[in-house]
Length: 130
Image (cartoon, rainbow, N blue to C red; front, side):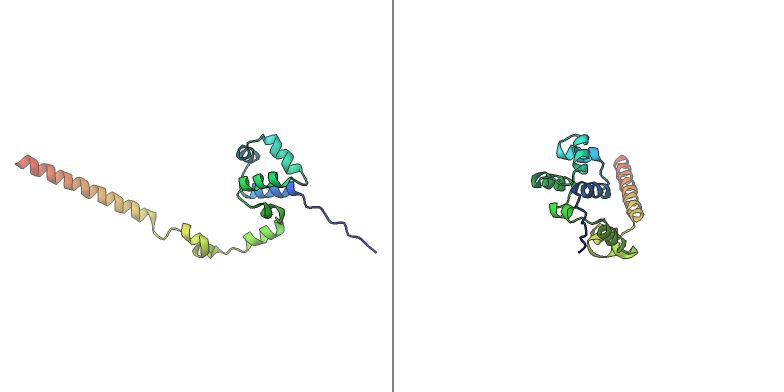
């Protein structure tokens, strides 16, 4: 009978990877948690955390406790690799997608300002003629 040793889930490594994927430094996480950077380093080296502390870390990272517990780097990579170039035209990304040319808006604003100045000049000339 063979027994397969299962690698324990290292919660600290998961926290590290999620923090890195979110582009957050240890110092920023420490500040969010109100602890030192060294304490964050200690958390990231821990195989397990108390539920309350894990909940606080999850909140600071902007994820759920379950997201940390169930984090799988391979799944995360596959998720991000599944996006296509047109993903910004679909779903939630559509809310942040510009559907107008910002340069056109600048030109439009400039033309309105020029017209306002012309109107002022015409009004002042009219007042001077009286």
